[in-house]
Image (cartoon, rainbow, N blue to C red; front, side, top):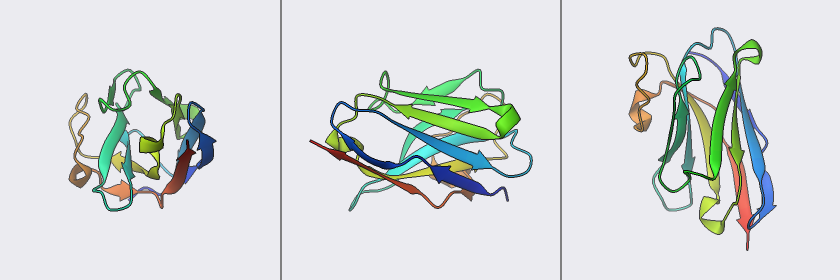
Length: 125
């Protein structure tokens, strides 16, 4: 498994921004995704990025507000979150999918085999 370490969570006001980072150890030519889980809710897909970084996929709830990118040289992916609202409050998890075909970004957590420890994002209204 690849080790993933998230950072960048915290408290933001509604309408504000945060940037999450996920640093990976070892080879990182994987499909990378972000998921989130709010209290009492199931973990849900937020965004994913292809192995090359040329293709991204977003949940409808964050489309147009969140941007996922990757820096291969730093083995890091970044989730820029803008125009935050209270519904974005959750623990955010970075995940790696090492086995899906090239170009396929899954929204299912079961297809990601490595996970970070999670970082809390709290948006105050």
